[in-house]
Length: 611
Ligand code: ADP
Image 1 (cartoon, rainbow, N blue to C red):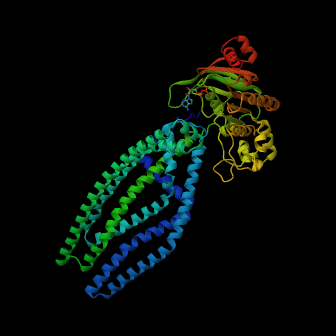
Image 2 (tube, helix red, strand yellow):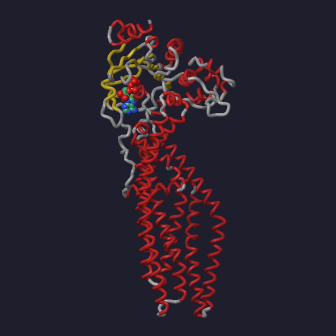
């Protein structure tokens, strides 16, 4: 049975082991080929041919010089032919590679962006949003998705560098095998660049939490919703001071890494340059002794910038290969995380009609990463066709219970049974299509009013009759009537001509959205009317309860309502009182009042306050 976050460890691969590296490399190449197979093959061939052009032309110059000094016309012709053919390849390459490369890169990065988005939204649970370690990894992947996007160009670079390495090694070896030591010494540059890369990567990961907090602080300081509190409580200096501290810490970590990397790389480069100068002097000495030709000396001098470029190229490749492989390894981790948490074993189509209802059997729950039980030994039956109210103090576990019913989480112990079928066995998409929800912290979708409501049932987003019925159920018609272009009005201050609404008006639209699905099996209302006054809430629920009873006769649909207002709660068929994550009492309003327990006490307290 699938369980949230159990199979894939939250550890994304930071220090990569060989199998992870190989898997990342395979994913990288496979993704590029899947996006544009023919173009990618053509580009790789072109990159290889272009990479051997300069070494080949250098060899042509050596032939030319040897031909001229040895008065050998056949060698002169060969030398000229190689040089001219090199110019031809360069010209053709220059004309065609730019546009083809751009087209391929666009296709590959488009494919990768789509894949990353698909994978992220395909996880049916919400653990990845609420566990900081997992959220950090996903944020890093999203932030660095551009790296995956540009990875195709690096793939070409790798192919080109490989071809170039073979060609340059061939040239040096053709003069004297001892010169093959030069590129081997050049590997020290690869090592120094790699160390620099590791340092900067490490610094970046250490500063990810800084970035997350900084972004949140910036959001708070510019979000109009927090503007009031920021001003009333005089929070600006606190926000600015915290931002400055975080920025300083972040800069400090990054600068230290950069400085150390630059010192090491600079030293290694100078040493390598000195060794190359010695190699040129040695070649000259060998030529004077008649053991090498004039062409060989010219070749060694001309190939110097190519060896430097090659070492730099490999260093750059190693640097970027490391970056890209790590990014692909994280992406691979995300894909496996999504696959492990896809609840693919949950394939039961689920009921289209509730006969018995939803039963919670010995349900216990702790949030991932915490041992603290939030719900304990919950045994409860929500009968088909009923309205159930959850009551309890803040932190009693009401919202958590609602989340389990929506299967945003699975219970840690026990089970939620829908007409006897474990909710873990029911396809989460099928279950969610048959439920709807309205929450206190609803989303203010800044879209045209029609879509703000229509999103509640995407299949009927343009069905005005359905939207109007939902508006009626949510008592939100007056909100639309007050808008300049009715349902076509763009909502949200960020848009030119966009209309902003009051908290209560937004809430009515959110409620209408929750009512779009009119034949759902489970409607979860978690304080969706907190922004309305008690009387408005009471009227709304009276009307809604009547309509839902009629619909429930056909579907057996259950409405679960969380509210602090007893005028609303008392209408429910079943009232469940939660205390510290346990069911303290359950029954109808009359039964609970007669029982004289916690409910009666709370009810009396609220009634006294109103009197
Ligand atoms: P209620 O809806 O009754 O106010 P909740 O279900 O929201 O209560 O919370 C119950 C307990 O679970 C609280 O102690 C709360 O701090 C804790 N809690 C809620 N959400 C999370 C979460 N995402 N991670 C860890 N603990 C949580």
